[in-house]
Length: 124
Image (cartoon, rainbow, N blue to C red; front, side):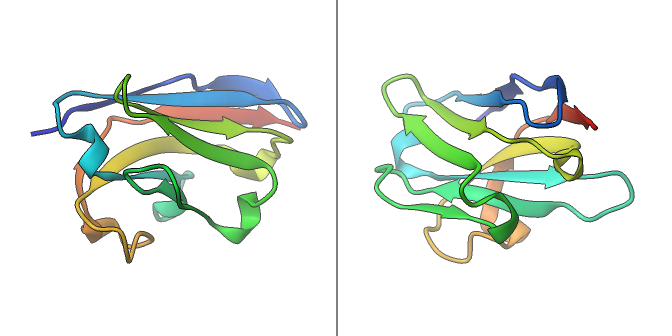
């Protein structure tokens, strides 16, 4: 069992930055691929970014490439999402999730555990 707790969300002006954190419980954190998803009001939850257990490989959806950076610290059981140059369309609840898989990461059903989410609001 893995429990995930996100933090770091908030209200920021367009062009600003936020860093989200996701702290995981358990001793097997390094074996999980971690993903970040977001869900805006009235929209489906969508993949944002992912990072494999070793941290060597990362993935991003096109709309955040060059602006967001995912990283992880396996010693601290934590994954991060650094978000720069934020836009109003980035406004959403952001979720972290843990997967036993290293492929198909954009698919929600590939993830075994989910956090409760943290709200990010970007004002224009």
